[in-house]
Amino acid sequence: MNRNIFSLPVAFFIYLFLQVVFFHRLVLFDTAFCLPYIGFILFLPISFSPVVLMLTGFALGFSIDFFQNSQGLHASATVAVAFIRNFWLDRITPQGGYEVAGDQPFGSFGSQWFLFYLIPLLLVHHLLLFFVEAGGFSMIGPTLAKAIFSFVFTFVTLFLFRFVLVRR
Amino acid sequence: MRKLLSFLYKNRALLLFFLLEIICLGLIVNSHSYQGAQYFNTSNQTAATVLGFSQNTRNYFFLRQANSDLAQENAELKAKLMALSAQLSISADSGIARPFEFITGKVVNNSTAQFRNFITIDKGSRDGVASGMAVTGQAGIVGKIKAVSENYSVVISLLNVDENISAKVARTGTFGTIKWDGGNPRFARLLYLPRHVSIWKGDTIRTSGFNAIFPEGLPIGIVHEAVLTENAIFYDIVVELAQDFSRLQYVHVIKSKPKREIDSVQQLIRTR
Image (cartoon, rainbow over all chains, first blue to last red; front, side):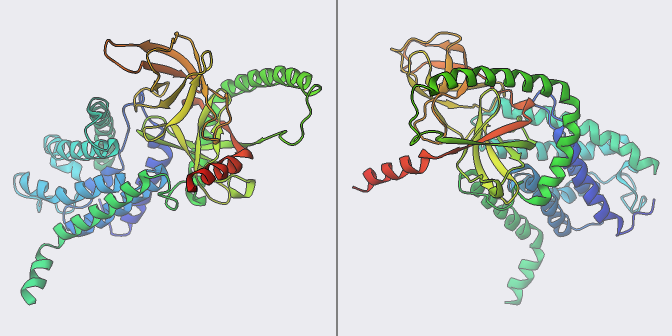
């Protein structure tokens, strides 16, 4: 796949548009939210520096907040994920390193690696997001339920995204 | 100096992380106050247009429901009109006639599942909407206006954990406060109802008219469950909301004429 630098801004707006227009309305039982926009940060090329990731994450989160009247909420969680992403990538380097694959999409390292990469970062994002939204731990039951169910929902959606990425 | 610069450069990621998170924190804290977040919200033209496109598509799936709701409201209004016109022939005090005006708006964006929910509607300052006005749906109250742009405004939903609304029990006239707990969007809580008052399941809860934002007597909901524990001073009351927020398509903004007068006369007392 040829992912050149110009396709990234396009992808940014596709993720943003889909999230705001479609996934934003997709709330199951008033508990499970679908937030696949975070996939944009998670699936950016491995060579990207944390500074670039965080600035992109801030822009993306801020735009999402703009549409949901939740100033700073998505931005803070997205920046946090962008910050820890590369540390986590360093910890779970697959056999032979990342050079083997070059700038290939994330789906090409195998399912097991992909799950190992995705699950903790998604959990961090969702827990941060919902606890910051609740403004602390006073509503811990419903908040935890929201975070976990939304995590499952987003995870399934992103896992399906992966097949689209690899096919191309 | 060079050491300092190299230190800063080395830790640029960490520093940027803290900087961005502090900006986010500032935005979050600012948006939680009633006066906050007047700018980056969905009363913005672009945001409202995009969300309106999405909401319009969704509305097609609920046309049948909307139709029957409107027909029912129509019938109720006709009945009310008959009753009122009978009253009108007796008293015709034009000085206080029509203290409230209604502006009907279409819902452009709505959420019910967050802890702090907002609704965007397609009426703005051009149509006479101003912040602080009350908003009601066809069945019960919805919230109050937070921010206004030329063509759109953002409503703080009753389903917002920061919102308090002064209410009364219609049967006894006792006052309490309606507050949503962040859980099920069909239910809210009625707080501060003292234990000596009687309350029944099915009692109607209405607005009290104390703050002059909401006219007195608008329906809020009915008592679903009332529990009084041994040592409690107040009841633990769950109210089923009259308005189903997930089906909200049209709302009425209430322009209250006496509001300014009530506010200014209260101000007079405070400054004495």
